[in-house]
Length: 224
Image (cartoon, rainbow, N blue to C red):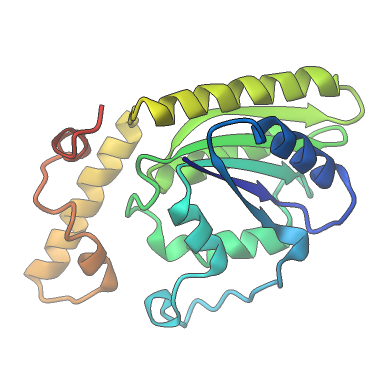
């Protein structure tokens, strides 16, 4: 299996590198391939809403997301949000929102802050990844001023074990909200096609259109 670790911090030699090192070491003896997206080593891209993402091609960030079976996000809190550079990376993948590109993929969210904001960011990330179709295995928050770092890492490692077991067992689940989103977007796409409105979303939705529900799609693709 391919596990992607996203280090969301644009800083080098900070807490992000410490957590990245701990997770990488924990995965060293596991039966997996580890891929890393390190925001501090990435050139900050520019979001251009007027440029069709299909024409310019997927970003490196999107390519790594699509290759992964499991995703571990390690992210600091900047003003109760993610760092701006990482937000741009997500903005450049936003054209895939509501297309379930991360279906079958498992996600763990680990946010860290000095005193506050990590919980709110975790909730935001949970909804974001679910909108992409992913299954969120769990989230955890570390507060450098008050948390026990060893305890928080143990919680993170336990969630990683759970994620890897679910990937190995080929378990795929979805939420009621994701099912409702599937129904809504399918209706939208069919309405566009009925009125001869051509969008790139229609091409990417061809895989889903024959199915009445997300549950049916998952079942007929031999997913548990």
